[in-house]
Amino acid sequence: MTSAPLAAVTGAEGFIGSHLTEALVASGHRVRAMAQYNSFSSYGWLETLPSDVLDQVEIVLGDVRDPGSVRGLLDGADCAYHLAALIAIPYSYQAPHSYVDTNVTGTLNVLEAVRALGTPRLVHTSTSETYGTARTVPITEDHPINTQSPYAASKAGGDRLADSYHASFGTPVVTLRPFNTFGPRQSMRAVIPTVIGQVAAGQRTITLGDLRPTRDFTFVEDTARAFLAVGTAAAEQVVGRTFNAGTGGEISVGDLVALIGKVMDAPLDVQEDSARLRPAASEVMRLVADATRLTTATGWRPASTLEEGLARTARWFTDPANLARYKTGIYNI
Ligand SMILES: C[C@H]1O[C@H](OP(=O)(O)OP(=O)(O)OC[C@H]2O[C@@H](n3cnc4c(=O)[nH]c(N)nc43)[C@H](O)[C@@H]2O)[C@@H](O)[C@@H](O)C1=O
Image (cartoon, rainbow, N blue to C red):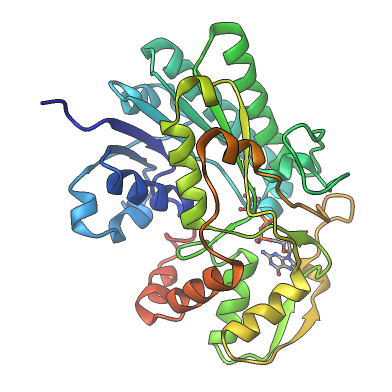
């Protein structure tokens, strides 16, 4: 009897990582999940997954900045999914060294472990932010890279390392470039949970930063399925390639607020807080995915409309049990 394939996941305790862990288990994988040690001794969102999922998950403490723990995580894995990253764009203006340590050196450590161990496949996580403000929409993978924040630069640095390892050593890496992912368990600092939280608290005037940027908001279960699709597709379809993952839909932040109001049955006004504005040349004004390459190679298509995803997200964030978890602070990852 052959045992279930083993997937090693960095960042498994985070927002997208925890959904990917569930999707991997549902599709018959065992998961070895790296959780970062912190003084709360928490395994982040992994702790909240149902026990029939956790039965298939081995949690190991580690940190992508530590080459030894990355190697231990990947040892014997059939596929590695590298999602651990610092992700908040505004904080990257304050602490750029931390972003390079985790997002660039951390990725280098994963690539080195894959090379040393001969891991059959690595799925590396990029971001739509690497494109900067779109010159043409929808954005294909051939769009120029234009990094407008230290965060985007650190992610592009990891992407370039991944490309160079494929070219130099034949490392079997696939790069997935998710557009704005949202859903249950997202950090309360992201725009959709911010608005839902304000509405749930009874506010009808919503205070945000810039209302003009447009984004392609993609429901987290669709993003998780995109990871699984590139992790399991035939090697010749995906290895050495970069794939956008997004719906192709476009909505401004201002119109998004109105849509959340519709979904939550609460007519909303919106006001701008200048303290929340990003430096003007750093804000990415337009991001919309062309995911044709991913659909052609793997058959992936988004299953949720924005409205359906928002409704599920609003239901989750208005459940007091879920909100209470954020009060500890340790789930804000
Ligand atoms: C793809 C990308 O996705 C995420 O980055 P994000 O785009 O910052 O995500 P978000 O959903 O919080 O913002 C969407 C838009 O909304 C604008 N916006 C206005 N006013 C507020 C506001 O008050 N709060 C927030 N959070 N955003 C605001 C903000 O300026 C931006 O234009 C990260 O996961 C990142 O890791 C990543 O890679």
